[in-house]
Image (cartoon, rainbow, N blue to C red; front, top):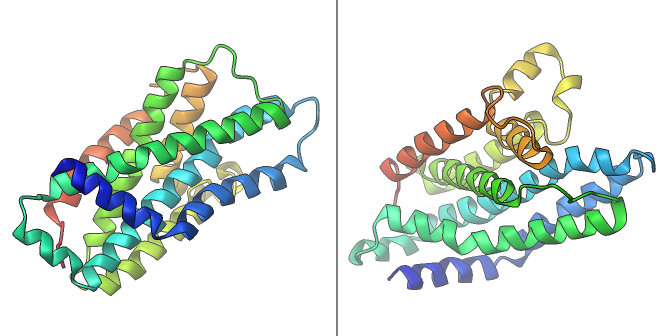
Length: 240
């Protein structure tokens, strides 16, 4: 049953190639636009700080525009109603959804790092890869669970799809993705620092640069958010 559900999630992903293109293409587009502002002498150092931002974007796209919106759509067309007649429970549905997309995420991360090394002088020496990949997977799971909660938050499936768009673009706009938190007005800085993208970006930067992962609240907040939204996504899971 578990393998069957993973296959189902992969088929859903394959049927929406634009989501994959958007998830892979947007960070690469950001990279090449961003590269025009980088000085050749400091390019590698700048890339080390920017890399987690681009990978976070890809994670969010996979979790929101693919998983969450697809779930909302299958709720809307009553397809998930069939699962009520099977042994599949919400926890298994969510677990297999995460498992089916981990490979896609890691493939993107590896491709992005390779391009950054070849063209933008990114240094990958002295990187604790186990720590970085572990933090990346935790960030991805956090965003997936947030997306699943939003996709099930409203009784009306179409309304949940609309809410998913609002949450996704809201997090992109004020979560430190498109605009550095430091240049935002004071009020927005306060808001941005308590949003999940800030947890992911700061923790990934700490893991990549070998800094103290537990300095500040970000990594602990990411763990707490993962647990909270995991419980909420199971509690509010809807088949229709």
